[in-house]
Amino acid sequence: MIMPAEADSINQAARLLAAGEIVAFPTETVYALGADAANADAVAKVFAAKDRPGFNPLISHAADISLLRTEALFDDRADRLAAHFWPGPLTLVLNKHPSARGASITHAGLPSISVRIPAHPVALAMLEEFARIGSGLVAAPSANRSNMLSPTTAQHVAEGLGDRVPLILDGGRTAVGVESTIIDLTGDVVRVLRPGGLALESIEALIGPCASAAPGDKPIAPGMLARHYAPQKPMRLNARHATEDEAFLLFGSATANFGGRLRLNLSESGDTIEAAANLFDHLHRLELSDVAAIAVMPIPDIGLGVAINDRLRRGATP
Ligand code: TXA
Ligand code: MG
Image 1 (tube, rainbow, N blue to C red):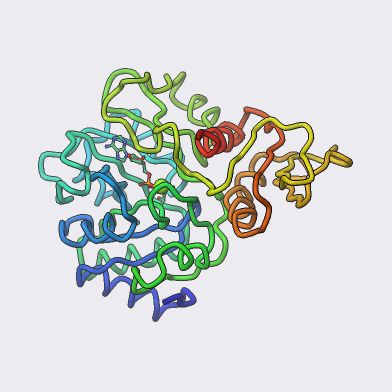
Image 2 (cartoon, protein in one colour; image 1 turned 45 degrees about the vertical axis):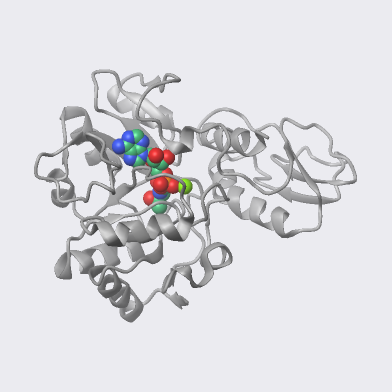
């Protein structure tokens, strides 16, 4: 059931988490499907609701970094990134703390663990209340069925998960619109496992150059699988023109007379931040439309354009 996020419904969400239930809630990136990270049975319900094929590791969310410091080992690089960018769209993969309370299903039995503090008032209020009455650690993937588009509104969550989730907190449209950037700090070399809502340029300005994840690296984030974040219609990238049978996903202002039966613009002003915020919403709308195929204009590979192109490439892979 969708409920507007208010003090009462937020407290109810925290109580559901404490009782081992799952709840959907907004973060600044996408909507999350959360469970008590320390309760293995509760976390198993998240995998079941999503039809997630394997037990892929989940991100542990908390409102307070002190809760995460007893889950994961923060080194100097992690401290600096956390101080700069949390709360915010950045997930850190760190070596597990020996006394971590997260259930092993939460981190899929890996020696590493992923953590983040989301920058959304509803998520933070719910996490704070849950820290008062429970573990305060919420394991949460995006609140979509496995391999489907990530949800940026409560309605998207309801369309995908419906009555599989007892409570969906509605906090409006998410501001960032793509998932967090995931940085692996478990080794000497800093690796980007997933480009996302925090531009790589900002991260590198703080801690220096980051390597991209080498193919074959383990553990592999499922977000790195070739096909993921997929719309249910064929998608053609780097299109300059669309046919009359296609919907055209545009970027920028110079788009007149480029064809397409249905046209949606990610950002008329050519802003990759605005485009990221619109990405999944526009794809959801095109999916629900009667147009059979989607053409997408080229998006510049800078700033959040890197995350957008990453999601589009995976969505276009047959
Ligand atoms: O913005 C986000 O990150 C959203 C919101 C809800 O916080 N969450 C999200 O979760 O996108 P999910 O599960 O859809 O994607 C998390 C990715 C997965 O591809 C997972 O495999 C990877 O992070 N991951 C998690 N823990 C990891 C670990 N220890 N090592 C490598 N990859 C990990
Ligand atoms: Mg996801």
